[in-house]
Length: 307
Image (cartoon, rainbow, N blue to C red; front, top):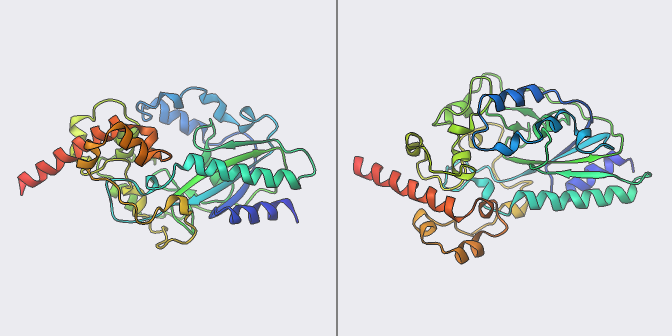
């Protein structure tokens, strides 16, 4: 079986909803990334500026790399806005995608004629992942800065395997957003800029997950009941599919209720570990969750007193 077919077959078996290939080379969106950093849009995510120049070319991360295999995994696209982002309800995507990409590399290594050199990248490596997803034919970048896949929409995690194999690159997909502005209009804080860059300083997902200090007072009302993350700009995408087709079970824990703001405030360290270990929420920590719960409860009190 040709390697490309084997990769596609194995990716489907592992539950990925899309897979594609791109030839390693200089990045085309590095200047845009630098522009985003220079405007201060990374907010407190200083780690993104560290080793920024490595994003110029994946070969700086994996010198033997010839191709990038990009996979996408679907998570639920529930349009109802809840206190916890859809993506955070299941297991931590870093762990899930890493484990599956390891399996893909193992299968590939067993079939390759040359010894396989492979580097797994899931969100934390200095690689411009969305560019490689576009170049690998998985979709286009929407006005809200996320990858949009024509079949599954934008509720997707992406991961990469940098390999020392030459694979025929996939054909890129043209941008089909057109005049649609649903994602831009859905953002209550105006975090999405006219050029498609997102100002993390105003992004509810950033403020509730990554931001270390107190939430700025002028932005607190916009959080409403948010406790972790925000789906407003992704949930409204017309390309999203309803139903659970191609959603990995790890990302769709059916029947496990998420805690309320009051319950979050009452969590002990041991409770928090037991409930959230192995999830993205655990990485963010209990103190931020309690901070967000305090803001959510204050917002609710204000809204009740105004009625």
